[in-house]
Amino acid sequence: MITILKYKPTQGRQIAASGGLFSFRCARLLSFAVMLGCIAVGAQAEQRDKLVLGGPGAVVSYPLMHMVHTQALKAHAKTVEFRLWDTHDQLNSLLAHKQLDFSASPTTLPALLANRGQSVRLLNVSVWGLIWLISTDPKVKGFQDLATQELLSPFQHDLGDVLIDTLLTSQQTARQEGESVQLRRTRSGQDAIALMLSGKGQHVALAEPLGSMLLWRSESQTANGKSPKLYRVQSLEEAWAQQYPKQPTLPQAGLMANGDAALDAALTRAVDEAYANSARWCKANALGCAEIANRHLPHIPVAVLRNAIEITHLESRTAQNAKSEIEALYRLIQQKHPKVIGNQLPPEKFYGP
Image (cartoon, rainbow, N blue to C red; front, side, top):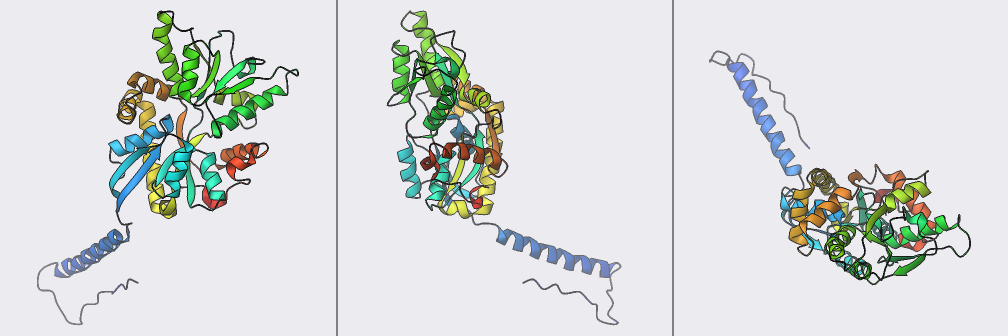
């Protein structure tokens, strides 16, 4: 508690110097201001020793890489590092063992973990579409043109798999019996790329930057006659808007907070703000962002990373701001894949920052 003492000069007391009373009062006010400043500094959250940010090799992670590169969180932690994860199983393990404070992830994963009782919050949605249909057939203009044909998909037991299944199932209702798309799941994105380059696949759904990687690799091989010409056909985001005009947006990926970091309101707000700033910078400076991402992903050429950034709908919005769109997606998923989000909508406190 702060007690404010009002200065009252003793009766008959005079300050000899001209303007002395004014100067004395100013001195007392200055002292009081300094005291308040000290209290304010003391009230700030203590700087942590370390923060660990994580994410996959997708565009959703590039703002996090930029944050580490620019020391955007130096006021909140002495050391900030980025940790790359490859599979959802690996991510789940890192989260469970409190080895990640913040991570990029599909929007369904934190909902699942929150409904299981884990201390997680979704801070924002930043990627509104990163999956693309790529085809060898120039006549194919979208997912709706794949009836009776085989579609390669590397997505297994994750949001990409759920979204593609939901879209194709919805499109199937307008087709004749026997005209369904034949979904062929591959072990990984690299396997799908190899099948397309060898001519053993005609159509594939790939997330960025793998879609750009496939097209980049096919250019030289096509020139040498070693692989068929490939076409970037349609984003899943565009197909989704056509199929679901009443809920056209696709809040696909964003940033989640984990463990005690999720309970630190000041920290989550600071991280969300820094992420939004870095996302804007990456979108406006695709080449510079690609060069930073390449330090963490040296196996992917800068040109590929740049193209992935340019073609991805990267726009960071807080989870609170995008709540209605996120919940619309959750409700749609609940109809056929309820286990993906833990069988129910997450609680109100789930939406951050």
